[in-house]
Amino acid sequence: DQQVKQNSPSLSVQEGRISILNCDYTNSMFDYFLWYKKYPAEGPTFLISISSIKDKNEDGRFTVFLNKSAKHLSLHIVPSQPGDSAVYFCAATPYGGSQGNLIFGKGTKLSVKP
Amino acid sequence: NAGVTQTPKFRVLKTGQSMTLLCAQDMNHEYMYWYRQDPGMGLRLIHYSVGEGTTAKGEVPDGYNVSRLKKQNFLLGLESAAPSQTSVYFCASSYSKASGGATDTQYFGPGTRLTVL
Image 1: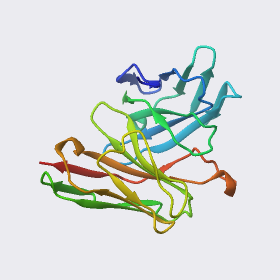
Image 2: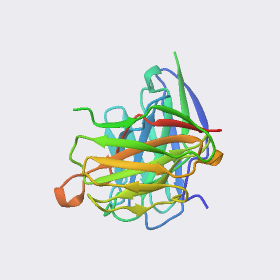
Image 3: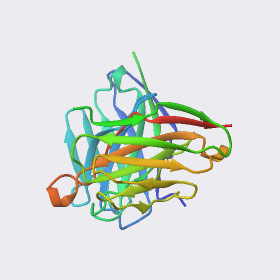
């Protein structure tokens, strides 16, 4: 049973518009959430994270929103750029960061068109 | 500062052969991890280590063994490769809370693409 779900395998957005990537989770013990970005033939790179004590975290063009009651988080990219085209993985940790084990979603492939 | 490196980048094995994947990190991280990524799947944790000399099983440990003899290295072994182990393998590392770092931010290597025929 998937604990972290990214229900959209792909998303296509026009350059300059907003990209919204969604993630749902089922385990109420998750208390720290991360987004990773992955280009082809490279390892994932950390993008942004959020603790369960917050509902929003912003870093430049990237903002993550957390809705604990709905067990839902989303990543907003504004404005989207062609270089943002990549696979985005949502991840969560169930142990309060004590071991760092992450549970990953299957990923959403974002394509930003010029 | 090379970060996390993995050796080799590509490998083709025949069923039943053995091999070892090497992961090295130069960030003095306590924690290290091995994941596999299959098409249409997220990353699944195989084994991890919370310090030199320690290892633990992750979500999909069967058919793999690991060793962490040195803090900077984490080895993943396949004793008798099977076609089901065809995958891309990623190593990652992270700080520990004891060192005051952000435990949960993992830094990944570039991956090893393994094909088992």
